[in-house]
Image (cartoon, rainbow, N blue to C red):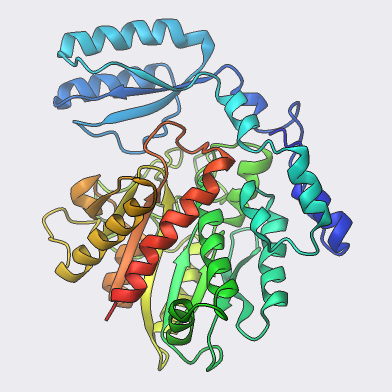
Length: 446
């Protein structure tokens, strides 16, 4: 990715002690391998037979899917290299015509590599603004995406600015030994006194908007504590544990090597050369059930060889369970993802189970409050019922095993115009509207 401004420069010039990760230039980065690749959205129609033929066609061309679980009456988003675009589209259009699917194929990215470059390009004005800043924890932070090291510095700068209400915490350890770093935000009673609220973001490495969004909400909680009775009420009532990047190895890999990387960076199991577990299919909740995850190490939803065989899931669960078993307990858990604009209640592992009534009501309020800001439309409900079955997910584990009453999961912007490569100019609006939805939850939780 070509970043005309790198947060690493800011760190070097202003902070001295930070060894920031510099995002590489266009000749040796994760954008170069995507040059000329188109991302197309293909309607699936109502026929399972037609869907199977489409999946076979995608497999024939060995294409990478953005839609992890293709379903009928929906669509699949898929990367198509320029060398095979003509023949693939000819066969696709023939298949759609044969199946009587009238909805046209649309193009999300004409050139994915160029979109990746543009995703993080920033102006000279922004560069000058950040160079003059005494801290990364300013509103300007939310005008661009940033290297992993600078995310750590952003959290550290927040703690430095608000030492009476924030501290750095570690929620677990990655497979490569990196601490899963977060920020604990607390009120006048001090840390560890009130019920916990736990948020995980960047579970899937390529979903960069999620870390920026939870950092925006952390920023709002701290900067408004002293001037908003509403925000002070939230912070005095709960202990917030916000982990912007719970998959640090994968996140760094998505910045330096493969922008579309999803899983962690765990070594391949015996007999395979494919790295990574999907750490949202590796939790010990209906892990052995079929149909909600993959047993193929090369698939994006590979669940691992056993529940909790990923260090990230095992240690994050231990952190959460320890909080639940404390006197204060855990009031809320949210797992933040992108993209699709959806807000989920349990359950993911069984589509016959109805969502808990209170959670469904809160999810409706979240989406209504979010929509009131910019008109962004979200769908809400049980994840199994409105998208597809998932097993081994963190939100089901949180709700069923840990016993966190207010458990949700989210898919942030957008619905497919940009997908995972969401332009930086959408960071602010995504944060603002999501914060409106979260404020509804915090106000109406009992």
